[in-house]
Image (cartoon, rainbow, N blue to C red; front, side, top):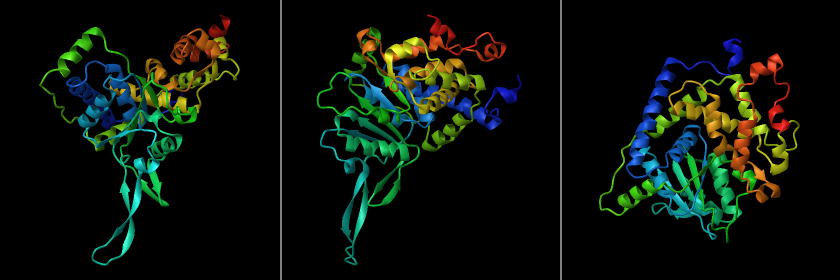
Length: 361
């Protein structure tokens, strides 16, 4: 197979190769700076960085007290970016997020005119804390800003700063008085990141760190312009056709109404991922490859980001709930069901159907 047939992008140029090395070094420095304040959570940090360099937004799920807010604030400080936190409440209005127009009078001329006062969404990193605590109308205002990267007030458009990232949090245990995000709005988040409890040793370190007088500061690692440049490098990373096809098949395999999907998907899934999942799988895998200093995307990169990309795009049914199966379990089964390197095998006829092994059992 020729290189032309095997890839969907040209190889990286010399300048881009240097940028990949710079991004890998910056990622290691970021982990070091974050480690001064945040104990553990290395996987969460990597997924946050993947979303940032892939130009996506994140939804963080975790119980209170896991330092989600501190993690995001520290990340913004180490990236030398502006940061705003919005605490979502039931009485929050869309204008409280986007901003509003007020009448101001020019003292010299006496002329009155409307002036736009920017809301907290005008920042490089916006923490939407407990986004499910506010009514759908206010949620929609934030999600419109995420998608369009602008807000419209009084018929006038106002561009948001670039780079722009929304990192929203949800508490999975307190659901009273909440407004769960609809699936169509959840789909706008590139990654759904699970923040888990620390290990015993990590929790001991947390106690030591937070109950002492000493406070660690973090150094600036990357600027906004650096991030914009590296975002372009991420999109240039080449991906082989069979790797891109694997990502597409992984997303399509979640759709129970399609032919050839595994039997367990028909049994446990009521709704699967849309085409945006395929796009985000590839983009997130490209970002992960670059963070690890690789110059092309591998199957392992796709598999590593499959959970965060797909878990909020798979809706399980009652059968799955009865057996204690979650979307992550479905994703892991799919990874085991889809042939890893089946391109040449399909050509030679050894794998006549995509999900042959999955349907055989």
